[in-house]
Amino acid sequence: MIDVIIAGCGPAGAMLAAELRLHDVRVLVLEKETEPASFVRIVGLHMRSLEIMAMRGLLDRLLEIGRQRPAAGFFAAIAKPVPDGLDSAHAYLLGIPQPVIVRLLEEHATGLGAQVRHGCEVSGFEQDDEGVTVELTSGERLRSRYLVGCDGGRSTVRKLLGVGFPGEPSRTETLMGELELSAPPDEIAAKVREVDRIQLRPFGNGVYSVVVPAAGVVDRAEPPTLEDFRRQLRAVAGTDFGVHSPRWLSRFGDATRLAEQYRVGRVLLAGDAAHIHPPTGGQGLNLGVQDAVNLGWKLAGRIRGWAPDALLDTYPAERRPVAAAVLDNTRAQMALSSPEPGARAMRRLLTELMDFNEVNRHLIEKIAAVDIRYDFGDGPELLGRRLPDLDVGQSRLYDQLHAGRGLLLDRTERLTTGTWSDRVDHLTDADLDFPAVLLRPDGYVAWIGDDQRDLDDYLARWFGR
Image (cartoon, rainbow, N blue to C red; front, side, top):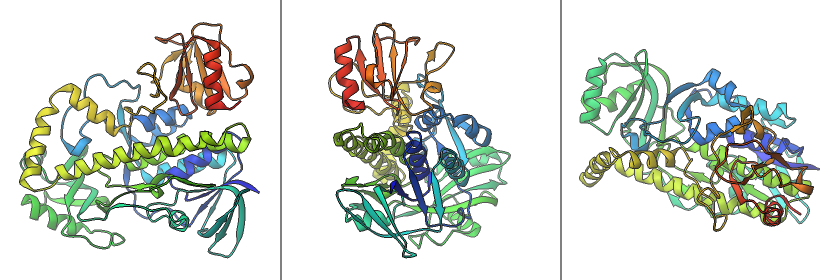
C-alpha cells in the first residue's frame, strides 16, 4: 500500500511530496499533464516562501535562476518604497518562471524518493477506515492510506469529495504579461500616474510587466494576443506605449472561492484545490506552497504512528483562516482597481495612508505572509509566529531545518528533548530574547519558556507521546 497519493504535481503537490519524503513516507504523485505548460509565466516568491525555501536548502538554486526585485508595490500595485523594518533576511521578491519552479520542486521531491507519474488523472475514489482506493482514468486502481488533492481550482478530488466551493464567479477579466515597450520611460511613468487602471512595472532593458483590464469575460483557455494588449491599452490609456515582443501573455478573472472543508476523513485538499482568488499581489503559488509545508510533517507524523489525529486537524484549523484572509485582501485590491468614483476615492486615500511607514509595512507583510500568527493559546507575542533567520553558532537557524524536524533552541543549557529526540533537534547556541523556544518543522514557534515539565507538555502536543 502507498502511504500518500497526491493528485497534481504543481508547486503545492511537489512541495508536499518532498515534505513527506523527509519523513520516509511512501509518496506517489499523479499529474494529468504529460508536458509542462507551453507559456512561461513569471511568478513571484514572497518573503515567507523564500524563508521556507531557505529552511529546506532550496533557496540558493532559486536565486541562481530568479530575479530579485524590491519588496514594495505589491498591494493593489500602489507604488511606494520598500518600508523600513521588514524583519526578514529575505526581504525581497524573487521573480521566477513558473515552469522552472515546478521543475525544481519536482526534482527536489523525486531526489528524496517520491514517485511522479505524468499522464495520470484521478477519476474516482472510495475511502474506508483503513485507506483510500483511487481509480485513474485508465481504469487502474491504486490503494493508499491518504489522498491529497493538489489538482487546482477545478479540482476533481474536491468535486468527488462533495466539498462545497462557495464564493464569487469571475465578473471581470484582466490581461497580464511581460512585454517590451518602446515609449520613453518618463512618458510611461507619467501616464501610469494619470491612469491607475493600468500597471506597468519596469524590469529593465525596456521590458515591463503589463496589467490592463480586458474587454470582457471570455473563455480563459483562449490565450490573449499582442493585439488584445494594444487595443486595451489604447482604450484605457489612450496609447499602446509601442508594446511589442511579448515574453508571455495570459488573462485572469476575479473568481474568489474557498473550500468549505480541507479534510474529510482520509482525503485532504491543498493549494488551488482549496482556494482560488485573483493573482493581484502574487499570493497564489505562495499560499499553496505554505499549505504543503504546514500539512507535510503533520500527515507524516500520522503515518509514522506518533501523531494523534488531532494534530492532523490543526492543518485545516490553521490554514483555512489564512486562505480566507488572502481572499479578503485580494477582494480589497480588486475593488481598489475599479474605475468607479468611490473606488477611485478609496485608492487615493489609501495611497496617502501608505506614506506612513507602519501602514506600508503592514500591507507588505500581509502580502508576504510574514504577519501570520497561529492561535496557540496565551503567551508572548512571538508564540504562534514564524521565527526569522537567526545566528546559531557558526551557521544560520534555517540551515538547521533542512531535515524538516522540530527544533529546541535552548539558552538555559539544562532542558532536554528526552524521548522526542528522534523527531526534535536540540541547539544551545542561539541568539534569543527568551530562555528557550520550541520550533515546529514549519518554522513556527510552538512554545516559549524555561520549565522542563511545561516543555514536555508541548512536545507531547506537537510531537506525540
